[in-house]
Image 1 (cartoon, protein in one colour):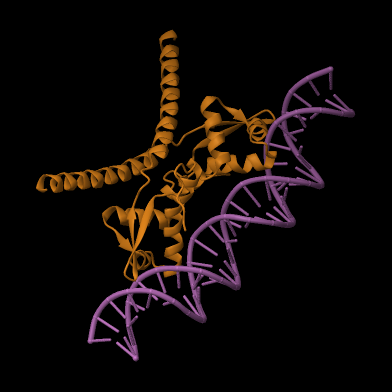
Image 2 (cartoon, protein in one colour):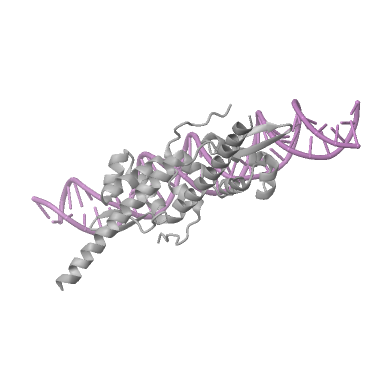
Length: 113
Length: 113
DNA sequence: CGGATACTAAACCAGATGGTTCAGTATCAG
DNA sequence: CTGATACTGAACCATCTGGTTTAGTATCCG
């Protein structure tokens, strides 16, 4: 059984996003659920190849799947990328502040001249 | 020369973030600039090891470095993770909408009963 | 000058990753 | 029942990754 991490560390989620095929899978699933075959076809890779990618996404909770007859259909969720969004926003805020600080410094230099 | 990608594709940036040591480097650099030795010491890895990680971060523009005497000091920037933040927010919005839709559906079912 | 410090380049290594093929099982349609 | 479809597990492969060691070069300090 593929157990998805309740609190997957940041870097594991980013690792799941570190592949263009998996990004494409997620974007496809944003539109609608899809089977392994549909994902594989669109990506131009084999069924087992697609299945492996889906398993990685399942592993970090970005995708969940259910068996429907002989097909396996993939849905987004349950992970919502909260922690990742928060980390990136925090990072961006630090850069922002640093930039502001530099701006003010330059302003002061301008005044003094 | 390590050329940083002006428009690094999403997955390349995520790949740079897909390692706990590199995440730690970035968080350290949020506090203040640091040399390769400082980063290596804190991470408990060799100098060449740390240098490689820094090079990856440079590769996607998350870190820039300058040589100061015999030391190489690392700073955050110039990349601000704009595209990554935007992608994640878009993704989250899709999930949000889907959740809302489900919520309304459940409400309607409740009313009908 | 001479030694210590900070880095770098290159070679190497084990394990992970992204892909394949092949041989199965399970389900659906006629 | 039979054949086609959808998936799965296992084995395999090349390449990438994260780390090392070793042997250098460049800089600083006394």
